[in-house]
Image 1: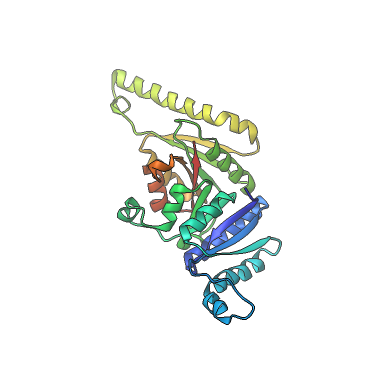
Image 2: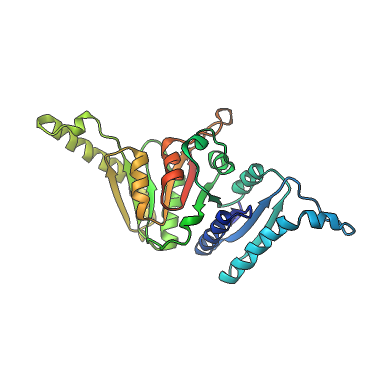
Length: 285
């Protein structure tokens, strides 16, 4: 894995917004920035052929223009241009495997499109070996909220997600808001007698489980201030609502065997389509 943040460029306003976000993040983490543009018809230049140069003109222009802007706003940042003659999905998955994270512009998709995984970005999110951050163009210029949010399920190991979340909060110097959503059952909604006692016990149990998950990470990152919260609503709704006033929402995606293909659960789907901030999807076991 290279010490680099990669951003995928396609010439859209959303991908340029993603490049600006990626440059800020690379600088905070003291990493290089790689600007990747993939085009299956990219032609290798030859000394005596101007046709290849003409055919590649717009591919080069997309990367060069982004490089020029980001070099001006981040003069100390190492920026690498990367033109790839391949399908966009293949090139981005390869770039993700070699990077600390991959950043993509996101236009936002309706639920039907997301269900059929018709978008390159969602294919990459579902298959990538590293964290993928989706940045919407209309959100990029909004005021910073000075906190980041991580959604936790409390079932199974989530070390990759928690490490990403704590490092993100540390490098930004902001609090980390750890949220666990749990849809209440009938025992919790009871308001009298034994029902309310059970509800109290369930709430205490959930808070204890969340604290147990966070304890070793608090010790590893003592300078990161953590606010932990259990919300009695669906996990998808809990993380989206928590991210409403945040700079970044981080959610986990379980890795699946290749035979099963990419699958995005309801929390990732809700985060990608409804969160009012950039979303990082981090694969974990």
